[in-house]
Image (cartoon, rainbow, N blue to C red; front, side):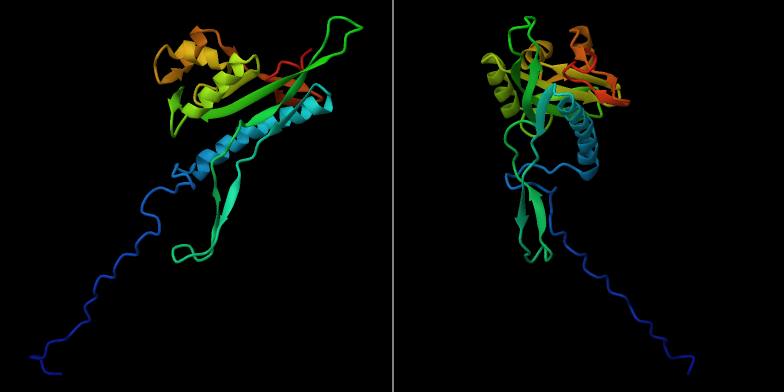
Length: 217
């Protein structure tokens, strides 16, 4: 090869970047943001603790409380998702619904069963948003909880503040009172208002989150 010849090397042309199928964060069928898998798994773990307690209540015939699963819908394959997938749809109702036994002080009077509705929340931070549309205790959840309480039905939010290591059981009216016009409540606010804190209780050799205060009686 002559020295005057130019050695040609192939020039790599930049390949076009693959466009993402979803340009924004994943949403459910109602346009609401899907929970990240990590956050969802943390929430599921906390709900499992409550569900385990519900099973212990049933075993001891103290309460019967069920967990309402978030419904899903199958999205068939399309150009952007050739394999199809399951998508969460908007959940209706509360996380846990059921009733618990209230013993009568009179031997001749039968025990009564009290209905109860529970919404479960967990946050990393030491605060939780309220009356919001996409996070925390959402606006429609607060309104439904307040309706329940105003009609004499027991309704609570069980809130786990993970960094603080505290779990509160709080009524809708207490949430409004503690917030005092703000769009969030904090661990400090709840502590100052002496909101009920939940703790683990041993029953049958296991530890349970006794949110109805029934296992130590």
